[in-house]
Image (cartoon, rainbow, N blue to C red; front, top):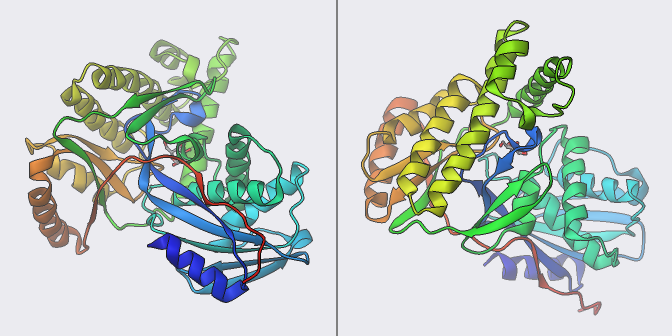
Length: 389
Ligand code: GLA
């Protein structure tokens, strides 16, 4: 178990008893690339998580250790800067805390977890949320959860350069067992809804293509959305994000300017409505309808927003006519990672087996499948006891 391992490694390495925090990865049922356009999203925290164990030091050194990479990293608190490795997400949080007036002293931190990296399950948000939560506990900053997720988001913007929205951090921090979260990314109002799939399960199919090219393309999509809004605003000043835009506005003000920007914005405007429709399906117990909307989302992400890739398209196309699959689509930022599928429980094993063979034949790669459970968000799994061992 990860918890026991991290505790053991920490004690061996630092001869101290740490506090331990766990922060999960996330799925998103529908509502993709809507968060930074002030729309709605429908994520949930999953049963795969990042753990961090931390303890105070008597000096100003930050000593990080990753069990996965078997790597140490040391830096002084006043010399924290971005790196190109796993440490950047942790250091980004430290820097953001400093910028907001929360000075940590030196500390030891060991990290481990089972959220697959680069799979679109937000392992980086999980690292950031776990870190901010753990440091808040350790140094008694009294930062509330809403501010913690803002710090985590800023850390991502500054240190890894991805101008991400708030969905991943929100889901990791505020997840609730067996519930999805309907989050309004404009007002930050949210509600939990039990995820009742009646004989169906959420299955993630990982293409095992790492979305490494994603950050520049992600920021470019974001800019294209902002460009569309700027063109509309010249005539309709009340429009402050694509949340306020309609297809008519896009036809009138964006299409004449640029076809590609129009294409991107029209995906977002359609996705806003698809989420609301899909959510109504979930509320009415009409999972087939929700599934249909998920297929439509994939189409939009692939053809209009152009954040899919051939392996993700293959994964979705291959299940489209399978009666055991109600819905499927690529998930997260894009360019690799997982598809999310709603699959009849009895059909899961057969689906995975068949698809793996086809995937190998067409793409010379193996897929990895996860049947996901929905779990609680970030939590303290072991409080601090400042006793040396
Ligand atoms: C990434 C970002 C999120 C969100 C999704 C797409 O996961 O971190 O903020 O924009 O992509 O929906």
